[in-house]
Image (cartoon, rainbow, N blue to C red; front, side, top):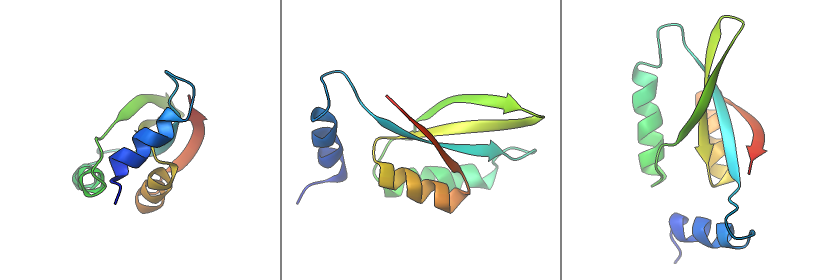
Length: 92
């Protein structure tokens, strides 16, 4: 049986050498920070056996946003659904 990491590696290898597609989920940062939600985010990543990877955030209209990057699109969708984030354009 393949592990999630093996499948991700094999999937990434089918792309051109050096290219890796990422699915990105953006979460609005609550006014007082993530607090216990950050713990839940870390538990989610640990349960999926993946490293927590965040990308550049942004600030817009008085709100901060944080981006989380995933090699597996389904994992990204699950994360977005669980934490109320939104999928943004896939980055290459």
